[in-house]
Length: 618
Image (tube, rainbow, N blue to C red):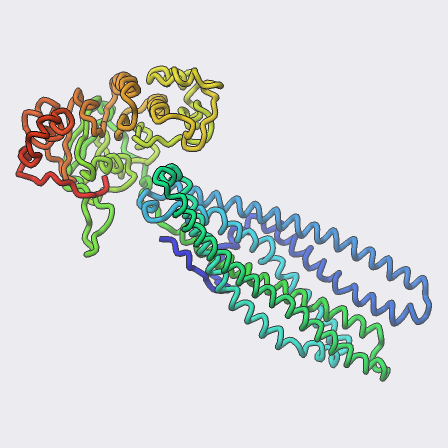
């Protein structure tokens, strides 16, 4: 699980080196921005000194020409400062956006490569926080922190050098308040750090909660859980608000405190410097310049404290981002190219002694979902898989498509171990039709084609016509160009299912996999789908998982799974003749009156195996 409580150090050299690697492609922009920042800081240092010259030299002498030159110098400094600040802002913001783009693309690419086991452990809402909020924080670091902090450091150093050069005694008086600044700043940093930690954790909780409940809104409404869901969200949101209010308190204290300390420094400067002016040991222009410098001295301190928070936030966010990016990709293509599949085989599938566990038990032992499963599917053969919930049916498909890797044994496709095949090559052999069809925002044609450039409009229409999806598509206002809402919300379950069949057919797979593909549709749609299936399965290796035995009775072979083991295999009539598990399932679906008259426990099973199925994952 990705840790939302990661706060990180105020500065971590290891993380900063990795972050600066994103800045390296734009180093020219960063250097130009740094030059603009330093140049602007130097111009800011010049303004109080010009004021000193005007007061000490030109005003007492009533030198109008000299005052005009000072005024022109001020205008030139202001104009130059505007240009430099514009350059700095444009370069940093532009660079920040580019870095944010690069980082988001890298994270998304990595998310696409991670296996499903990772998504079993990590809520989608938290992953969304990584890609959105945490990347935004990194953007703040590059636009307002890592480069611009040099401007604050240069300004502070420049002001201290100028003040010490002008009058070191008066400078020390002005700097006498620095211990107070250190105390206030440390208090601010410590408390804001803890507040930031809580805010980040709660933002992730809000994202995760919203993603889960908005996606499941139909269930919330069906079971009338609106009030309870509202109360739960209100509690999380209230906690988030309270933590933010606490952080506002720290800001509300810190910035006025810095202003008060700055005012105290100005008062000390006037008290001590005014006395020196009266004694004639200090000019009035120098005193005014000191006051201006002391005011400017505390602004960078406030800015640097804020940049400390940006740095703190960036360290925490970068640690979470890099923890995600460092998540190993356990399922990937082999380094060497796959062995060429033999030309005589086309969709030959073999399971050899396959064992698999999603998770370990509390004792650390694997909790096997599949146990020593072996079977063979010949090219072009149609195979049905049945079994109770948790028997491991869907797990077979997940392993075949290599969404997970087997714990023991091996799976061969055309006599090649799937672990030795390029993932793209392997999955291009299959089309998978699930019970829960996932449609994307776009058009009807887009959802059939899924961005494949080699599938023409004619291919899309042909596939839709073959599976009888063209009838309802023709009734839509824009036909194949009709928009599809998120998750296909505007389409019926049957319509989405027909689109999934059209999608599968459009890709012209060598192997067709059906996972409860007709269990959620009405009888009329099921008849259409059955007719489409005969066309789709023709000449293709087909594996169909089904609860409705009517959909697989005419399969060439039926496999019966029970508690993760392959218990029976044969045709429909052969399995009925065994009077085993398949026979029991058949009785449950088609012989209601016999079921009422005869206890289920009296139906024989091989080896007298218990009929209760564990609530395992399938």
